[in-house]
Image (tube, rainbow, N blue to C red; front, top):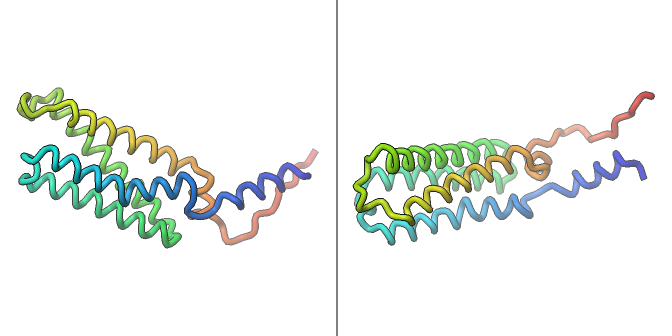
Length: 156
């Protein structure tokens, strides 16, 4: 069997919202908002902060918007998912720097769970940004060309 046709068959199998892509959408649209709800219940002093609510609504609003677009097969959903991840990453980094180095938070309110949550957000964003940029399934599902893929001929 021709190696080019084998690769072509594998690439065509990696299409659609399945596998890691489905898991990413599930985490972005369901688990991430639920984790923020749990975090807010553990830190009731932050529930009354309007900035926290603005960040939560914007962040998860972007996630829902991106997820719906991606579930509908729209390539711009990937762009919005990247924007959501970058916004979450920037907010987490700024929060960590401001809390740990800048001394903006009262040292009594800085907890291990808050720092762990921030580090989890940074890791989540970094991993999924890498996935969205490198995944063959993402490329085949959202950025496929309408022209049929033909094996390349090598000249010797």
